[in-house]
Length: 197
Image (cartoon, rainbow, N blue to C red; front, side, top):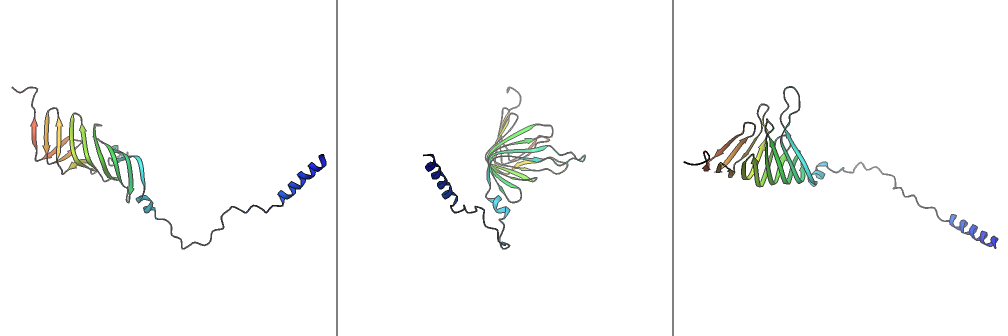
């Protein structure tokens, strides 16, 4: 009984080894493709959309060579990259840093950031500096020159609300390092002192 069973196993092994060899799965060798066109890196960037980004605009480098600290930080929920280090984004929260480490926060629906030049925030913009609150359509950040800090500005209407004043202005310039607001065509109410006599 052992011999027929052993004979059967040997025949099965012989048949399995006589099968056709498995074809080589490696791809065919590359031919000369000098006429092939490489994909353009800008075409990849134009279609690139991502979630979550932190963008910084730093102060100019000081004379001692130390890198400048940030003047502006923008965090966005989603963004896309355009040509020339330009970012468009949505769901933005920004912080403008003063020279003495004060902070002015800005929230907006969308915006655009051009590396080392400017940033624009648009759509239901809310700016908070201490107790001062501003409601704007848009605000633009322009990087300062070597000896001056940057400036935030808008040429559209501004509503300013603070415990001591409520103002409407046609435009605004904000110099964060000196804490100076320049307002154009202003109307509103300013309260002096605790009580009116």
